[in-house]
Length: 345
Image (tube, rainbow, N blue to C red; front, side, top):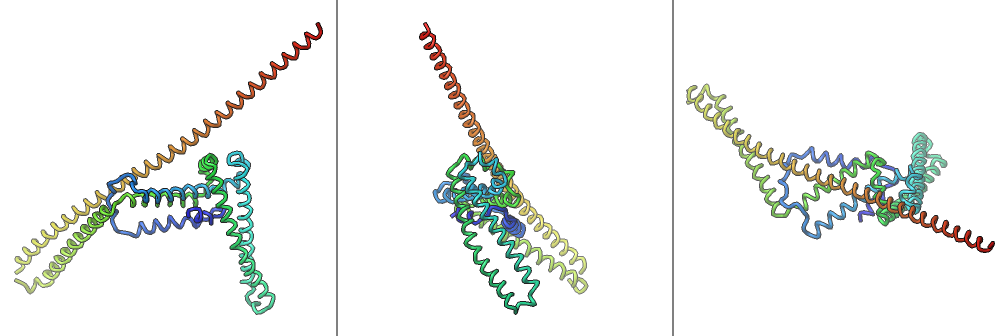
């Protein structure tokens, strides 16, 4: 399923991938609901949750590979030794398909622009013929896009079948466009949200929801009391010329003011408690994200060291074989020399 989603991505980078982050930021900024408390569990325990995270991790990995195809195509000479002939052949075929699609789309856009400029001749037969020709050419685009989808799947399969090549390609992060990197960052951010959601048990979710509802209701009650007292105070001020004496009103006003201050103080305490809880949660989430990022960097570094070590072993083995061959040739040469000397005697 993840491969079907990735296969629609062309070789070039589309700036529309940044819409995911824009939507996420809009949702995050527009909400006023407080964040829930962090879950008590730190590891996934059920098979279902592990499978969900595995699918998302696999999707992120494939997106990282697909978004580097443009870099591979632009540096084919350097990439061929790194990825192999089969992968580079598939990349070149994919690049050709994408270029054909871009050329056709550009041509159709130019044709439609010209037709818009000649709309006054829309009743002419030649104008209708051009419109029909454009529609026919548009009908050829879906099969071409399907071929691009298939070539993308083929490249991903080849890369997954060659983990060493995929690891070497994944290190080339500088070859990824800013829009693609933003899309990957959004997926990683989504993974963090999903991971935290999967760690939360139904009972914890109910407790957190109940906690937020209690805080909200308490805040609403306090606000209602404040509004009532303020309305009563305003009414007393308006009617003090016709009221029970000024001194009595002044005493009532002071008492209500004290009550109001007490309610405000309680409200401030609740707000401070909520802010502390929210700050602690953000700190824990940040530490967890930093730990995950550090683990990713460590894994990538380990994979790079292993690749370098394998290359060193292969070169050492080749040098050793070369030395053995040269020694054997020297021995054979000496043996032939001795045989000639005996013949002369």
